Every structure is written in C-alpha cells, then in structure tokens.
Length: 334
Length: 120
Image (cartoon, rainbow over all chains, first blue to last red):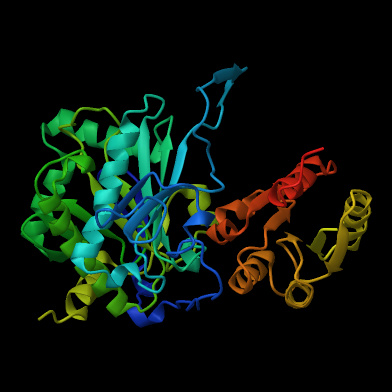
C-alpha cells in the first residue's frame, strides 16, 4: 500500500510507493566522464574568470594568480547583473523588476579531479568559510534580501564542468520556497513556541531510524517526507537561524559530518549526481527564533514528470527509514 | 590581414558572416562542424575564432575546450542564438559570448576589441 506523508514545515505531500521499493543498486546512474580539454577554473587559467571577490590562499600570494585553495569569482555570464538600481513596476496586475543580483561561483579546490565527496573535512571547511564570508559581504548590499548557495554535482544534476564548484546568487527578493519554509516554521512557533527544526532534531535523535550519522554539533538525517530517495538534511543541533554566525570550529564540525554523509551516499550509489542547497535566514533578519539553518542534499535519482509538476507531490520509491539504514551500513568507519 | 575562423553548421550564417567580415578586410576561413573547425584551427592558426555552440557532432563548448587546450592565446567568441548556454560554465573558456542577431555590430565590435583593432 502506498503511503502519503506530509512535510511538517512546508505542508508538502509526498507519496512513498512501497510496492516500487528499490535497493540502491536499482537506481541507474549515468556515469559522466570528464570532457577533458581546457578548464577555465583550473589554476593558471585565472585570466579566463572575472577578477576574484574572495579567495583563501597562503599569505603573500597576489590575487588572481595561482596559490589559492578556494576562490570565488563573479559568474562570467551571470543570470543576474550586479550593476544598477532596483526598479520595480506594475503592468496591470503583473509585477516586474530589473534583473539585479549577484551571481558568483565558488571554485572549491585547485585540483580539477578532486570530487567534493572526497574532500577532507579541512578542505570542506574552507568551502563553507567562503560561503560564510560571501554572505557577510553581500549582506551589506541593501538591494539584496537573500543569498542562495547551491551546488550541482554531476551532469544529471545540472553541473556543466567537472571541476568542483558551487554557486551563489544574491537576490533582491525572497525565493518562494524560502518564504514557504519561513511561514511554515513561524506557524509552528506561534502554536508551540518552539523551533520546528529543533523539534525535528529532538524527535529524530529519539527515534534514530532516519539518522544517517551525527557528531557533537550536527545531525544528518533523512527527512520524514523526502522528495527523492536518499534526500538528506544536515542541521546544527544547537539552534541557529543564520549560517554565517558559525565559527571556524563549528564549520569544521559541519564539514566532518557533511563529508561523512556524502561518503556514505557515494559508497551506496557510486557517481550519484546530486544538488545541495543551503537554507539560511534572509539577510539582515537579526536571528530568528523560529527558523533553523540547514543544508538539503537531494540526489538526482528520479525524474520530475507531469504528475509532480501538476500536483506538487513527489513520488519516492524508497522509504527514508530504509534509505537511512542503507547509508548507516554503507561505511565501516575506522 | 587578420585571419578569422568561422565554425557554424548553418550555411546561410556562414555566407552572411563571410561577406560582412571580408568587407571589413578580414580573411575568413570556415568550417561546417566542430571536427573540421578543430582541424582548421590546428592547420591554419587563425587570429580569432567565431564558434557556434549548437552543432551536430562536437558541440561548440567541447570544441572550445579543445581549442583552448591547443592554444589558449587565440581568442574565441562563442556565438549562439541562445542565451541559455551561458549556464554552462564551460563557456567561460571563451573570450566573449555574443548572442546572434541580424545586426552584426556587437559581433564586429567584439572581434575588433579582441584583436585590439581600433573600433570604427
């Protein structure tokens, strides 16, 4: 019997179709081989990117040259442009505005063939530090209301270059998905006077069946109503609505758990394409009691077709309790 | 005389571009697909390449990456009817991305800029 499950934050329904139950090896993954050839993100090719806006490099080395560990550059061909004032207008009942925004690319490693899942926690923590520093910087620009950080890994998930990178887009509006999440979280807070994500963390730690792994500061779980098989959320155990408030120690702890979660996933489904998105609070919101920053990692294993587009429902052939068990058993960590 | 290599699978585009750029005093060589374009890039060492993206066989972004591997100093302009390909970070290996239009002014200005010729 299929089961309908409701996401407690968004109110979104998903269908767990248990009769279509699958094992990790049942999900076909297209192995994308590297195209080879010139890579504009590699060290030595800095001239092919716009000048960097942030970089972590050993002291004394000049900007826009080699010697970096993480490098952030504006998108050479951005979806939104940074120059100009915001201009909004109404067209009858319709609204439009000019395409102001910041679109940046975080080049996560100087090593072209270094896959993000294979990063050491130390390397991964540097990437998270770059996210934090860019959010802090972009927050000063009063035109922007939200910074969305995301990663596409693998061709099927939208990555166009194999060199490990993620992207951020600073937006002059709040994305609809974030508004819904904030509204859902606020509604719970008004009723219970507790953060819904803190409640989720508390319940998941008690129930254990959807936990992938955890450490002192962070928890990696499969959500109760996941959109896709092996969808994972990584949350700080301590309440915090703003990612950028994490200190270096917390970022390292996050990196340890993020790395372990991805390694478990990739051990279970080699070459899995995935997206992840950082969900954090709107810029200048001053810390929200009802919201809790977290990462959502969504493997690209199922397709979005007419039913999903029409209904907003997702059909997931693998219950998260089973998926979490697969991941818990996928690695024997020494 | 500066030598331009034009790689585009549409013969009508080739004809128009050739006429326009030859009128401006360039020597134009052309290729109807990526494989031939890559071979001419190696043989003829152009001063600049104008490269279509959507082509049968090797697409323009793949051709671009091979060209830049061979000689990163030769400027390459990606020229496509579609903005959409800008999402592909492989396009960053290009020196400019010009969206095709009936008016070739943008493309001509890009060519002059990259060849460091005085703009007319």
